[in-house]
Length: 256
Image 1 (cartoon, rainbow, N blue to C red):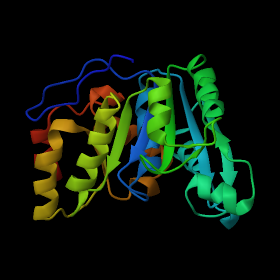
Image 2: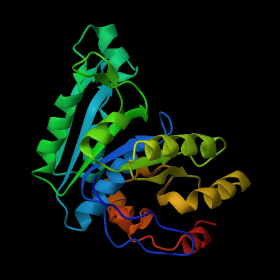
Image 3: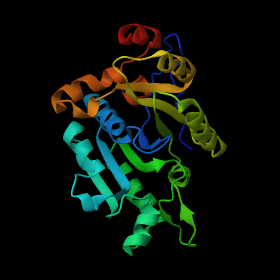
Image 4: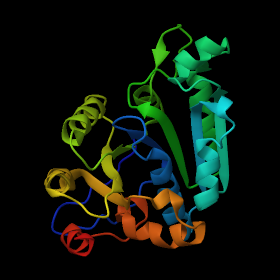
């Protein structure tokens, strides 16, 4: 297992060793901001001189004709490499989408080998999951389903957990972190969309999340001009993710 730094703590304790190699980006749920967070980490890492690849093992909902998640990351942050390993037309979990479309499901070690191939050519490889940590992604050679958590274990990779800012996030985040801890996967949290006018619940949640927090993106970051997005991204992330945010108290004062 790769040795990684602990998340930033309240009071401004800086993390000086950024994560390298394969890093999983998962979420507490669907539509929490994984793709925009992936783009922000890409932008910050590339600004620090890193060669970055983004890999999406399973993309679903492609029948709509809209760009996939890798396309969105490419528009915002222009990674050196962007790959989608399997795409399915229906907006379902990847394994279910493969079955409905009668397409071959993605095999675990095909995904592992593809990520490792990119690790050999890049400094940082961000692997964006689908939905939450335990969503069925494909099948093992045995025929059993595998999840993003299984991929993290197979790669020996840490995980970035993207969480909501509002009500319900503490339980979902704690469950996800506990599942990762049980698998000995190091993890930290990024808030996917911090509201422009935060309420009491947001501030209360922030207080609880800070010990595990690696960053927080403003709501609407994905709609920014790409140039503005790339310049702004390091300010949203702590040094573990190539950012410059090292004092949550100062951040809270600015955000308030």
